[in-house]
Length: 148
Image (cartoon, rainbow, N blue to C red; front, top):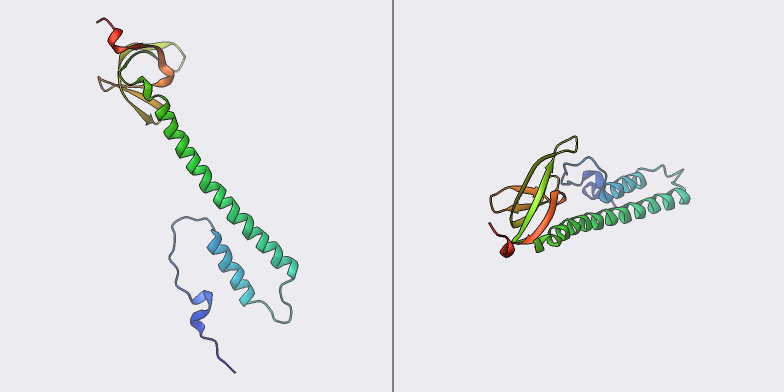
């Protein structure tokens, strides 16, 4: 009789640990393989159970692919928002800053030097270094038309 090398068992394989607490497709396969290796020979796993688990695995793989695609889409959309407001660079903007009760706390103006993604969304960076939310803009003018 041929002896099976114990190093070939999945339980004996060394694996790199990840820091997240979620089961991935590799973990699912390991569980399935361990279950198959350790099943009772007199009462093997039902075909229906095995097919069900493989369908679950297929669903898991598809969901992971969708999740990865959605993350890419969200990042792309964020970048598109920054690009969308880039036409305001070198333009004079007037803005209102509102307090929590909705009344105007501050009004101001400045020439837009850049556009960035801030904690609360897209922000315009003015030449004086001030950052203003695009939602605060009340007027846009060509900087060359502004008379100081």
